[in-house]
Length: 389
Image (cartoon, rainbow, N blue to C red):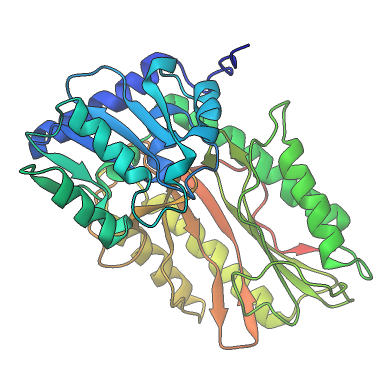
């Protein structure tokens, strides 16, 4: 019995639209074949979300073929057949003999496919900066005479402007993020273990919202007193105490798409310092959203936030946010002063306003939003409150 196709997250026409944009960029760069190895880019072009990128795999995009070809470890091929929109004949599983083999690996299978098909004579694009240097050298030496071009982040920049279908998916993820934060308000209490609260919140993120379950567990950060000056710590074995502050950052996930959310909670009345910081951050957040209009720049958004926050007597050292979409961060545009990236409709960002001051003060709040002509439109519906429990 063959494995059936799963219900597709997007229609075939949406994937072909994305591939068309990528092929236009390939033509501009004068390359015939693009070897896509970044998992988020594979998801974007095919719908594949299985966690098989721990070994060599690649989606081969050729100018002459409508559909790409996916080459992966043989045991992972059924997942590709199940999740990808492409025809099953375009999924190739390479043998187990290429795993943990010091002489040949899955990239050799990928190179063999390109060579056997007579592809790449007019140029091969690699996401080179994200590949081992020995792998890049293997392509240069084995595909004799081919021009190898670094196309790192070429697809990621294309991903930056979302379709309406992608925006709808990110709204679904945002509703799950909201549900997770509401669950946090319910379960965080004095005497409760951080681990138990985290289990309940993560469970809510998996159960989902509005009949749409979470399809993955994204990164999850719970930084409670005395660790509120940290930003990327998980839960611990400690229990919450009266007077504890809890900084949360997590996301709902829908078919790879994320809408991260951050909020600060306090068991009991927060300090005056944290209250004043919260008021300044919320004012800055609203100023940043107002500035995030079509045609402005990332730098303009950051400047709007920073200027407002300074009026409240605070500064933020880290950037104000970053492009977001599949698998959380898109390593392209940053909401920081000096980034001249021009904002376009349906670009999406995590306006990440976590602020860590020294070793004893930390506070978080954020919104995931899309760019519109009228400013940044948040996806989440959660109040911008410093939640008191």
